[in-house]
Amino acid sequence: MELLYKKIAPKKVDELLIRPEEKQKLVAWLSKALYGKAKPLLIYGKPGTGKTATAYAIANEFSLELIEMNASQERTKEQISKILIAASLTSSLFKK
Image (cartoon, rainbow, N blue to C red):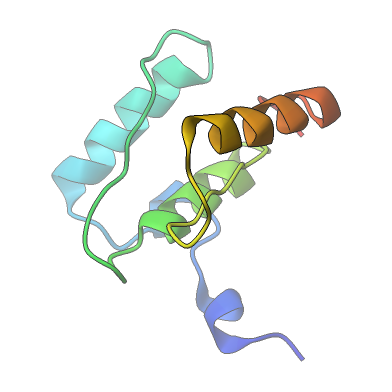
């Protein structure tokens, strides 16, 4: 049985419940990022506002791999480097 939050989670950018002007900015960023011509995207906000859902919708729609780091994880420079190096050795970082 699929959990309800996974069942109703947005699967595409168009399904995100965000302000139209923010969605337009996101789509503009995506059109550059998919060709390697965009700066990194930082999604921030209060808990429960859809940051993770946004990242997963982008990754799902464009078949991108996602590296998730939670606030509960240790996030020293060394730990972040270790996670990113391990991810880069086992995946493409860009496409699934």
